[in-house]
Length: 228
Image (cartoon, rainbow, N blue to C red; front, side, top):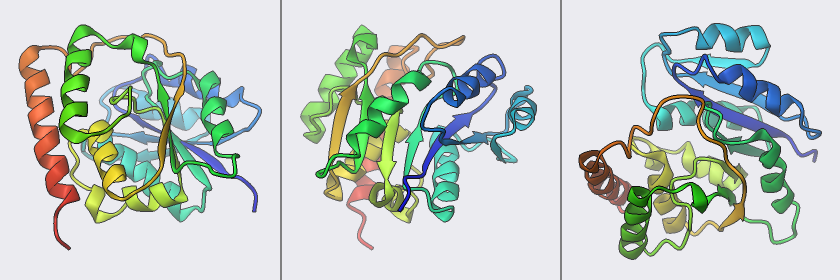
């Protein structure tokens, strides 16, 4: 069976960066299919994506980064892709690093999930949160909040299921779910760039950081250990 790769990019008001992200992916030798999920942008993000000729899935109202990602994952699963890479639309994740993630899944003992890790990008606040979360959860991943990930079909099936719905933060919530399901997760060191514009929604204040940590743990654990 041929290896079919899709790139899922959730985007909300990313008109300044989305074209560059798409153009970068198109330079790759592996030629993946690009799926952009427009999360009810109020700028011209959707128009740029449509003109570029890639798949554009539109939310009528903003549902957040994780549900936008899930929309792309569901579409990819219905289309029979072998693997899916998720990446941001703001320019932080470099298309040139996608092949590092893909190279790992050709191994005989390939993992279910490959995380593109760049711990050097972490601010002091992020490092504090990451260390707390590792101690509480037992997760050994270094770059906890990286959304630059490759998922195989097993991981894809899990992440479009009801168990993965309503995760407010897709990064650590997904990691907890993957761990509880026994899937194999590894990290690959990659380079990342600064976002084109804007600041982190989560790490802009200590109040938001605390809210992020508490709500992520409560929501994620409740989803993971919820009895069917």
